[in-house]
Length: 242
Image (cartoon, rainbow, N blue to C red; front, side):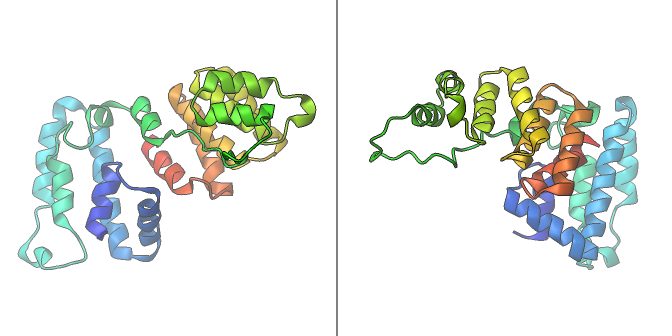
């Protein structure tokens, strides 16, 4: 993927996690790329915070200011076409209505939320012991989250392994029992048990779902400063929320 493609992908929120890492690495190592990125990002912020009535006039002024000279056209260090495209896109074609008038929490949640896969309990056809824990994970993998919750809840205390709370929280989240999911994720974070980093991510997702910008930023900051899990996505989300 070219640098130009990375920029288009970033501002259209279509990069994969690998591509995001590539972009953030370029920001650290390539001064010209960083200059281009910052110009376009600053321009986006100006557009976002402008009054809608004055928006078109200001965009015309920006377009005139960044019109490239012949000398600039011949330079490879700065891509004027991308900058100009940001200026002349006036609404739904790229940033969308919500990008001008506020954070679209629903879109951010849908773009970034994904249920966590079962990585703890291997389910194979050769299994002969149909334990309660196995039944719970079978239901979880079958996306029968109501049954999964009941089965996780019915596990005896001596079988409540550290990861059970995390998957139980996942199941609660899928059936919109948000408060119960938050309680379990918070317990994992406070007790510093298995899946701490992942629990910070899902608490941030819940905050987005509840349109609580401050809490979302809080959990994302902890994630970026202390853990590697979904770090690139968390950094991108923080940029969008600032």
